[in-house]
Structure formats: structure tokens, C-alpha cells
Length: 589
Image 1 (cartoon, one colour):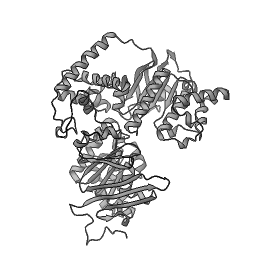
Image 2 (cartoon, rainbow, N blue to C red; image 1 turned 45 degrees about the vertical axis):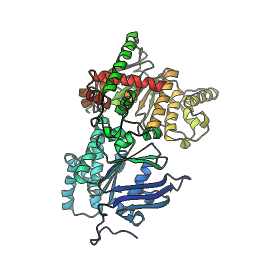
Image 3 (tube, one colour; image 1 turned 60 degrees about the horizontal axis):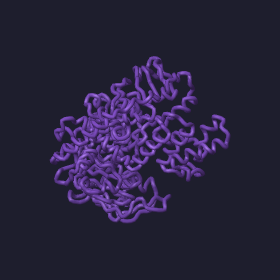
Image 4 (cartoon, rainbow, N blue to C red; image 1 turned 180 degrees about the vertical axis):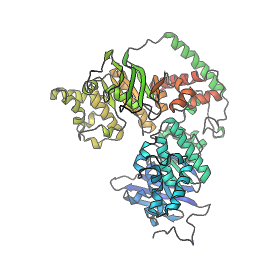
């Protein structure tokens, strides 16, 4: 039976005390899989709640969302058991059109959600489908755009907008239908730190203004807790393992058991020996109510150790890569994208290249690899000017790993993918086999040497792209967003793998990233770009404790710095550096 939402005799919404969404002993198995993705789910969500669905990749978070918005079973087939209710009715009685009027979804990939040639057309799409009169559309579209502060951009193409602006237009396209439930699927995945912070603030503002029910699927816990949530539902291997308030969750051992990163400020308090209780309000660094005496003592001890270490002296590394005064524009009369960029990467060093979307990070990487030619300036590799080297010749010295491994893979079989670069350089098949097997062992893929590429997981595909580059034995590897979309466990495994390569092979690494945790934890230096200009080249903790740099480059202040300020430490910037040094030492043991 299809629920007719246009019936005037019955309100479409449940009573205030009834759950808006209710899972009862609900399980789901995709048609193509042998094991269920959701197992015995019991979850009640009331109208007006704001809930974070947290978990590792593959835990079932997105599948849970797809059950609510009707993608399952209307687009993805499978078998379900138990009961799922929406508005006090079995969801089986709704078709996907009915559900779309109740629950709207903002996708992780906003580009995949656009259908209009302009922002206004995209917002109006749902109204056009409903045959809303033109006059009413002209009124409702700007009103909805104003809710997300985008009324000044209605005439622009969606693809000319920034990542954060695209997300706002996608959200407006959902809000124009006045849906009751807003679902956000990894809303922070493609945004720079400042835009991600803005997104969380926008979601919170909408929640306060409209009272809508909001579900956020994410694994970046600290970033989401920039603004309050009512509850956090933790998923692991298809099951709900916790349903708690933020304070209750952060003071339990569930995050460690599930492999989810806890907020950095809580790690710092733990290192100093402070035990956190729910009554201390640990859900945000600024709500904490704690005696900081132990933190001050820990900081003093670490300062002494840090001074002793510095007095031993660390020699300057030889420059592996040196970029000098690079300028570039894509067209003769176009805007200058790079404006005299200069920086270097030392031999065996791991450096980060950071900045807002459009700051020139990817363009400078293209110049280094030879994909585009700079208008002026020089690039040196091990002291040699590489202007005369072809892309193929540079690839033997400098490897480039794209964010999405699927965009780099050309062959169906793993062995052939790695052998391709060697075969274009006239190695014998015997030499190729030796080199391929060597890098497969280095990258932990040797047991899969005869497998098809499609049998690999996403993380294994990332390793495969690195293996195909390592076969040519480059000295420098540039990685574009190496951990994008990965949960903490896979993120850590991948970065530790890279550090092993750096140590064993003497590789230099340049990481292009929006991930401030990655920059803090794994890079020795941070090169910061803003509007095509290098505005900083410092240790990462110095960058993330400088509000001027943070604002110019759309970065985000680390919570460690805020913790140090709140604790009244005399040298808050130094505290961040000491924490990072201590944490690296702990992780290397």
C-alpha cells in the first residue's frame, strides 16, 4: 500500500512522542553478497534530533542511510528482515518519490548531484518535477538559497563554485522541498579545513532555525563535534555498538575498540595522566571543565626533554627537490595561478603542501611532473635543472600518486599494471619479473600477484598505484590527498606503510592534503599556498597555531593549541610541538 502524503484528513507526521524513524531488529543483505551488511539494528530517532552516525569504512553507515532515503530497496536490491518505520508507517508502504518528500540527502560527491546549468536551476529542479507554477518557483528558490547564504550566486554554474558553495547549493536543492529529515553522507570529505568548519556550522544553524531531524554520517569525530549533536551512534561490522551522548562516548573505550580517532585534545589529556569523566563535558575543547595541573606538569617535563634533544643538533638535509620562483597561468590572458612559488623538499623528508581549494597546490605538482610548463622559474632535482626532461624521464625520478587510484589503473591484472612502466623502457621480461615481484613484496601485495585488480580493496588499489611507481625507483613521491575518504585505521595503516617506504628506500614524500591531522602527525614541514603564493614554510605545529596563516589559507586551528590556551600554558605553540614529538615517539615504539 502506497502512503498518500496529500491526504488532508491525516497528518503525515507522527505525534511528538513517536519516533520519526524506527529500526526494529532490522537486518539487510545486498543481493550480490553472502553476508549481511546490517545486522539486528535497533534504533529510534525522534523528530528534531541531530545525530552523528560514526564508524569505520565498511561498518554499514551509508547502508543505514540508504535504507532511510529509499535507495534501498528501490535502487539497490537485497534481502531484509525486521522492521523499518518512517512516520509511524512501515517504509515498505512508501515509494521512493514519497520518501524524497520526507528525507533529503546531501551526497559526499556534490558534483554527482547537480542537474541544472545554474545554481538557481539546480535548486528549482524538485519544484519543476512537482509542476510548481513559475511565479511560486521564483519566490521559493531565492528564499531557500538565503537559508544557506547563497542567494548572491544563483546565476553561476554549479561547477564554477567552490567545494563549500557546491555543498550549500546541493543542500538548498534538498531544502526547497521542505523535507522533514536531512541526511548528510560524509559532508566533510572533499572540503578544505575552513570549508569543513563552515559546513558543520551551517548544518547546526539550519537545525536551530528549522528544527529538522538531521543525521550526519562521518568518521571525522572531532570535526563534527565543532558543533553539538544530541547523540552519537557507533557502527562496527554492521552492528550498532553504541548509542550515547558525546560526553558518554568520549569517556568510554568504544572509540579505541572501534578504531576511531579520538579528539587530539583528549589524547593530550590522557598522555598527561588526566582521567576524563562525562561530568567534565569533554565533547569540545572549550566546554571542558578540568583541573589542568597535571597537563602543566607534563608540558614542563616535555619541554626539558625537547630542549635536550635540540641541543644535540640536527643537520640540514640536502635538497632533493627545489622549486624557485615558479609562475604559471593556464591561458595566455587567464588569471595567474602561481605567482613566484619557491620551496624545497629534503632528501628522505616528508613535507606537506597545504592551502585552500584553488590555491595552486595541484598546479605546482603538475609543473614539477612536467604535465604543464611553467611560464617562468626553475625546478631542480638533486641539483639538476629538469626543464629539458620529458614527462617520461621525470617519472623515473618523481612519482605522482593521484587521489583516486581508479584513475591511474590501466590493466585488468595486477602484474601487468606494475610491469607497464618497465615494459615501456625496454627491460627484459626476466628483469621485469624480478622488479615487479620486489615491489609487490615491499607493498605487501605479493600474495595477490596473479589476481585481477578488481579483486583488491580500495586501500590495496592505493598500494598498487604506489607499487607501479616504485618499480621505476623514483627518489621523490608526490601524493595528492593520500588519505581522503579513509577511516582512521586504514589511514594509519597507509601512512605507516609510506613511512616504512621512506625509511627503507630513502624516499622523499610531498603530501598534498587538506587533512590537518595528517600534516601534524606525519610531515616534518608544511608549505602553505594561498592564491598562488607561498605564505609559510614552517613546522606543521607552527602553521596551525598562527591565526593569520590559518585565515589566509583556509586552514583550521588545532584543538591542541586551544587546549594550551585554555590551560594558561606560557608557551601554547611550543606545547603543540611537544605533543606532536611525544606522540610520534609513542607511535614509533
